[in-house]
Length: 82
Image 1 (cartoon, one colour):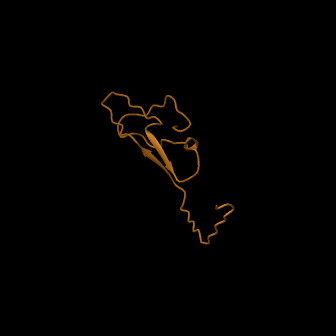
Image 2: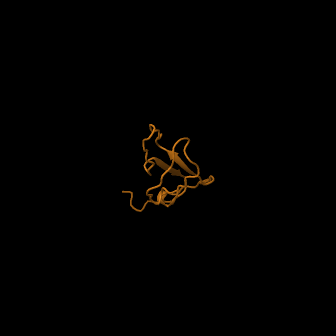
Image 3: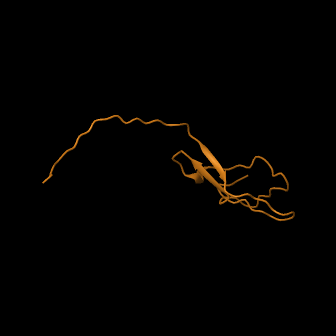
């Protein structure tokens, strides 16, 4: 009944782009008792971005120490490094 029907429409598509951004979101609050060890893993941090890219290609660098205690790096993946 409707074989070979072509529908046409006219209009304007407006596209606007914002500035690129990358946010590192801490998904946990690490707080340990005196003498305890707390681990910062890639599950502790989430990467949000408006870029079309693999979050594994983003490197996270620790630039400051903790308020109390020390940071000891024993191993790291490509997404979490010091």
